[in-house]
Length: 257
Image 1 (cartoon, rainbow, N blue to C red):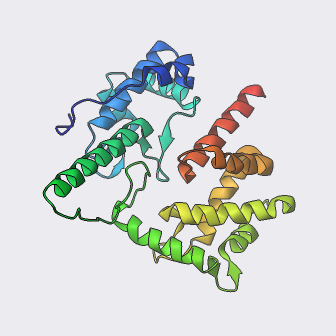
Image 2: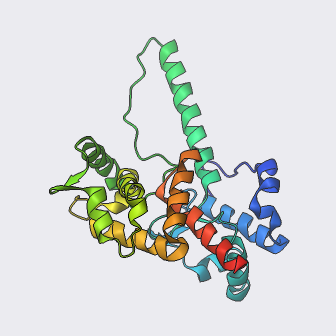
C-alpha cells in the first residue's frame, strides 16, 4: 500500500452521476479494485509494472477475479469511456492524479508560509512533469516540452512546410474540406504530447499521420473534427482525452448500427 497516503477520496456524487453508475455492480466493483491497485502502484494512479502496462491477467489476479470474469467486466467498463490510457496503453485514473496534484499544491503552500514566517524567500522551483498529464517518458518530458514550445514559436516548421501541412499530406484519406482542422490537430498533438516526437527529438510526421488515420478509420473525418472541437470544452484537454472521446464515439456508433 502507498505508505505516504494509504487512502484516497471517493466523490460519491460524481460516481452516481457518471457513466459508471449504469454498469453492473460487478463492473463497478472491478473499477474500484483497479483504482486501489493503481493507488498502490509505484507510480501512483497508473496500472504499471516494471515500467510496462500491467498485463490483464495480472490485473485480474490482483483484483481477485478470474481472467474470464475480468475480460467480460473490463469490456463493460471500457464502453463507458472512463478507462483512460497513455499512448503506450498504460491505464491510469484521473481522480487519483488530480488528488495528488491538490496535495502537492497544499504542501507547497504550507512550505511557502513557513518560509515567509521565518523571513526567508520561498524558493521558486521550475515545475516538473504535472501528475495529471500522463507521459510514458517522464525523464524526457520537460526537455521535449521546451522543444515543442520552440517549434510553436517558429511556426512549427519541418523543412519548407509546417508540421501540420506535412502531416496532412501523409494522411491516407483526408477530407479537403477539413484541411485546416487537421493541420491544427497535428500541431496541437505535437505541442501537447512528447510521444509525437521522434527519438532524435524531431517532429514525427509519419507517426502523427498514422495516429490520425486510425481515428479516421474509427469515426471518419467529421467525427475526428467534432471530437477535436470538443477539446475546447474540456478542462484537461490532452491527446489521451481526445482518444477517449473518439473511442466512445466509435463504440456508440457500433451499438447504434
